Length: 461
Image (tube, rainbow, N blue to C red; front, side, top):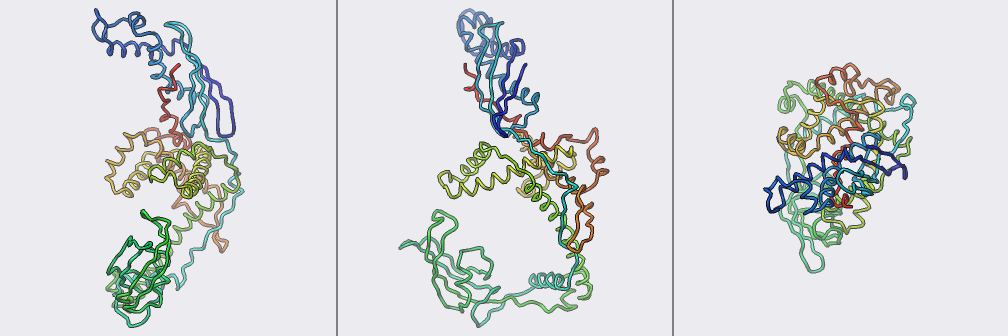
């Protein structure tokens, strides 16, 4: 097989492939066998019709069409691998030549496909990252203590206008014109939560028990999404949370400690641990931001449009132009990050160990509320494991990159992130000769190559 690549633009190439007859012959033999099992020809049993009879009765065209359709996707994948391409979508294929008759000629086709662009990453040693300090203040501890007190607090009715943080029991009715579109009764809502209707917090603030007010709001969901409704709300009760006194008795109630001072000391350690973990998250986010700022990443428009169409179709919102613009922006950003991180993973020669992959899949299964074994099996059956490997590799690429970057806190102190980003010795133990997925992040993510089955109609001469 011969192949050649022509770059059409930074994100698209034309792949020209020529396949000799001998390489196509196994598929031709398979085509004869398959057709022989399907046709009824007097004097021959099914499956026993000779090729020359099939040529006479069915025609060489049907044979070669079947063979090309059967083999085309495999030749395409072989050519992609031979040319070290990184496809990011389905190819557009045109068959330009097929064998004219049995034993003679060749198969030739061209495929235009969007690919991962070549980008140049900056020197990691030139990047500086500063994260917040892990210093724990008394205010941090008091905030943690107040959160704990709220868990053990009780709601008590108050005879005053409702204020920020209060819980209000409400009856609510929404109408558009003369049509009532929604109503609820006896619902408890905390002012400031912001999880019901725009304008509800402002409407309830200052409202006393048994008082009613009306306000206008734009609906954010449902069949009337985007429309303006008039909402009438009545406060049937106003309550505030009565918090327990922070003392030794509370410490014994809310924890395993006997005194408030012991509880506070433990809360201080908790805050310190959270801040340390947040440093690692912030460092990863800042590194990605700096890389994105430093590199111009061309984004394949076709791949973006395919993702946008899939997303909108799943929501039955293909005609929603405003939402399309939002999804397009998000899809473009996501693909840009993916291209950059795949390139980073390849540059750093990131490998994903079996244990790392399983840990990621178990966590993902929990998010979907599925049994880990069933989740992994469903991914495997759907051919999605390579995509998951790519996700792990991208995340790990940032961690590995941080090992080459000096991270400091806001006080100018060096920050040790080894607990979160690991080290080379740990990687070597995880990825060995017998227990490894052994893939570069970019190669794992480019599973589009394996899934890019060429449509049958593309192979018709």
